[in-house]
Length: 70
Picture (spheres, helix red, strand yellow):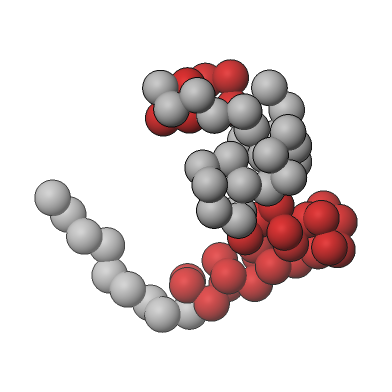
């Protein structure tokens, strides 16, 4: 099954057990609700998603949260 974001849907146990048809077939609503990543890629292309993803990673890393050792 193809995903717009590059996720490996064929190995998703969560989706398989819930009869997921994937984001392409459901227009970004594989679990009944709109997928934010699908919407981002659909509106602005993969580069838009990559820019957003990198921005979110940078913002998270700037929080300087110490590692949690369990």
